Length: 249
Image (cartoon, rainbow, N blue to C red; front, side, top):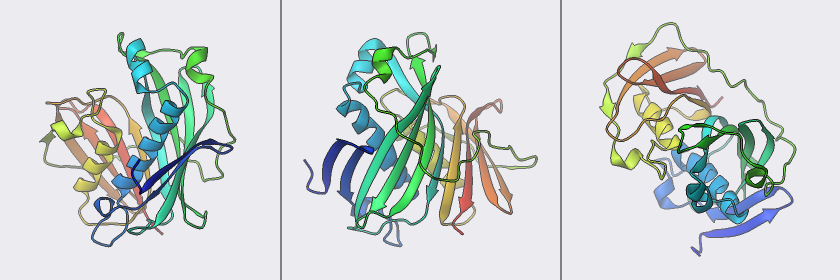
């Protein structure tokens, strides 16, 4: 195992793993980028599922998958290069087709520096539609009380006015194992649309439909006093994802 990464596996607070901030994960300020932080959260949920015995290979054989539908990420502080961090996750509930999961990142002193709430939908990949997970799909996960964080509703209010930006194609590096654009890549696309570099304090993403390799993305941007909203659409204006960004206070 990489010396910069240590699994602490399943504990009383869910699943955690320890790491150090790598040079490849920082920006010109010497602190972790938002996409890198999001990838830590994504990786943590993947590690959790693998450790619980309901990981990617098992779901792939059954032609099923948990697909991210929404999340709200709050960043209090971006960790610096070589800083020791602990990333953790746990499910907070399952209802019908959906599962809820929290994430957190702590510094070397155990202080929370980022957290997130997320909603996942269980998909039947063969039928290309949501399906109710079986008991064996959720039983391996221990539920925990939700994090104490300021939760916002799932629905992101769409702006009345927006500016159309230059369209661009989905590239190979956008694609994940499900042959769709990776969740984090939509956020990266939205960051590229910003007129200036900002320090993101919160991001919410509502995933509407999956873009695939070869699709064209037509972005629309709206700047409001308290937020920036990027709509990532297809050629007919149908949404792939909505990304709402708020600055660090």
